[in-house]
Image 1 (spheres, rainbow, N blue to C red):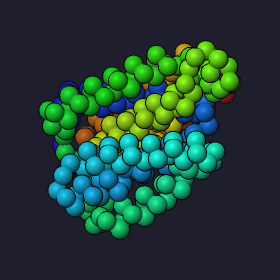
Image 2: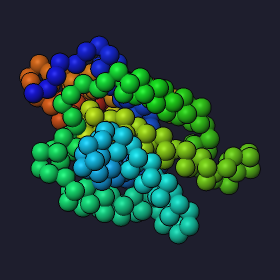
Image 3: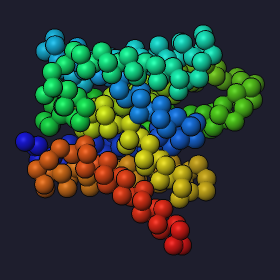
Length: 257
């Protein structure tokens, strides 16, 4: 039975959603929409192994995400295979391994998010991690955009493009890890992409796109969580449903305008 969210729980969820909005806006610009959903599934083996060892599933998911991200980055730069392709291969292997290692009940929580509230330590670490991701995305925004348009140009400015790429992928992985408890590995990628896609459709510049993406993600997270609590159901599916309805409304609203 879902637990009623406290103000602290909603604050952690909102901070995670804000980070997802910023990371997602850059992912959409980099055409990583499908890759983001696949990357979230990389956490599944870590969650499964943590459950087998009676450890924290969130910690296991974080470890798998960080390890998988470094592996994706290394393979991309050594083989020159596109990031989306490498993530796709890793996603398939991770999903298969995680499904084998978990029971049906444990798999449901890993896929759709846990029903319990985060502890005090997890809350503090979640807020700090979200703040770190947000600070990085705001500070590196210009370099990421220039690297997207012309990697050679950003290299002439003294920026290590490979390291910048790794830092962005790590920020991506941390954001996915933050959302594991709330949305699970199946739905977290959707919160990164849907609000950012909504923002891209409604905005004319990057700054506005990021603001709209963050606002959409936070609204979907808070409203979806409160509705789910009211109905006595898991919050993850409701959060994504709210985000999807906001996207549909943006399509109708812009066409009408």
